[in-house]
Amino acid sequence: MPTSTPLFTLGRCVATPRAIDALQRQAPPVDPADLFVRHIVGDWGDLDAEDAAANDYALHFDERLLSSYRLPDETVVWVITEADRSATTLLLPEDY
Image 1 (cartoon, rainbow, N blue to C red):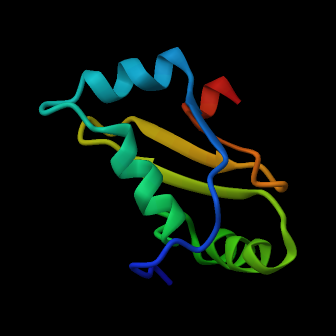
Image 2: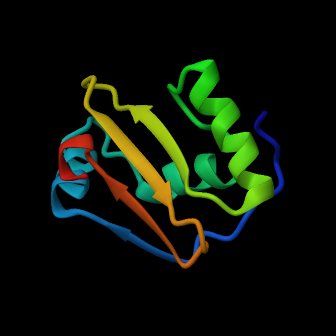
């Protein structure tokens, strides 16, 4: 359940070139920081109940976290935080 308080650390934030391009193609362009903020407060985006529950579990047991967001043009982008919280990556599913 989303909060207004960060639930974990993002570590180093990076994005793939294709994800950045997808964000910039939107009208208006989507700021990647907005997606990182949604992710860090537990707004997992368009995940089904099972995947959202897996993230809630992962918060307490230091496992990988995944959010999925649909952009205005229907492009799907993922935000993945590594289990050790060393890095968070913004990418397209096909970049995975």
